[in-house]
Amino acid sequence: MTALAFVSLAVWLVLVFGRGGFWRVAPDLLPAAPSPVAGAATVLAIVPARDEAAILGGTLPTLLAQDGASRFHVLLVDDGSEDGTDAAAWHAAELAGFGERLSVLRGAPPPPGWAGKLWALQQGLDWAREQGAAPELVLFTDADIAHAPGLLRDLLAERARHDAVLVSAMARLNVASAAERWLVPAFVYFFRMLYPFRWVNDPARRTGAAAGGVMLVRRVDLEAAGGLAAIRGAIIDDCAMGRLLKRAGPVRLRMSPDAVSVRPYPRFTDIRRMVVRSAYAELRYRPERLALALAGLALVFLVPPLAVLASAGAARWAGLAAFALMALSFVPMLRFYGANPLRALALPLIALVYAAFTAESALQYARGRGGAWKGRIQAPRPRRGGEVLR
Image 1 (spheres, rainbow, N blue to C red):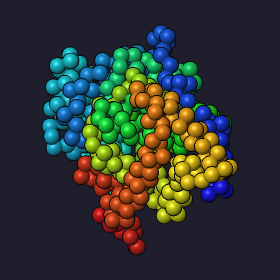
Image 2 (image 1 turned 180 degrees about the vertical axis):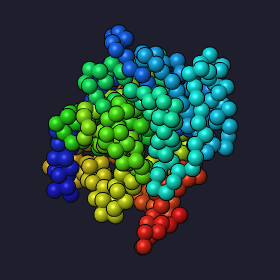
Image 3 (image 1 turned 30 degrees about the horizontal axis):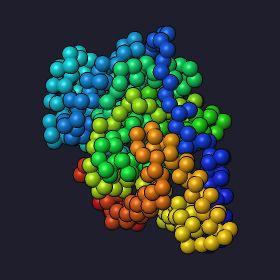
């Protein structure tokens, strides 16, 4: 245990002091635009929506009300909904007085090789081209995101400051239920550990990522990079987009309390399904990567408390130091979400829960149910001869 405790401490020293300050939230917040952006561009917002009738009334009007672009229009792509999503969108727009700003496109089922969300977005781009009004910028945003006034201006200003090909804002997720309060801050913390925002925003580094809830993209750069077809099968579409576009120019990834996801996850099983859908995709469906990930989680998050509780002498002190670094690094994220900082002491148990979710994600993939979302299997397991198990 002594050796493991010191290795874990060494890892935490590297994480806290050498991984892009991933734990520091304040420097990564999207700055507010001091004034309207000069030479504002035309913007088309494309919203993929599959069975989202229940939430559009609270989110779509906030998007339609955005300003700062020379011309702004919203296209909602109804991705095979069965709950009246299209009618709910029109009702919400008319009620808010923005009916002229909205178009609704009934999407077609995704062809083989395309993930559902990316296919919906592609149909939106095709629609714009057919209308003869291809925009300078495209705002890809999810149906569950509520946009505070001025958010589009902030995105446009950030893009102009850095001449960025992509600006994305990680939305503040819902933390109303007990499950959300315990698990959601850690979800964002782990994402930032994998993709330190400072590294993503550094043109000299190869790290590319984005936050799929809000992504402002320069259309010509997306087309030059191969378009959405280049990442058509990606389950984690936002990070795929970030990697693709970082080859084309600067990308900016920020956090913003002005973009809020209203999608509820009232039970632990709801969050489990959300994580299980994509966790194994992050590991590229490779068993050896799964084994390394689980071993890494154990070393980083479980060894420190075990060393404190079950060891003595140097091992205990090393475990205590590692545990302190772990807990303190989690506190800024807890404060961002208004949670009690003492919850940082539970991070090892929370990490164990996420490890179980990751293992289940691999199991679901092996069963041919990878990427399951709203009745759609998006990552079927390949079989010999090129067939897939559905």
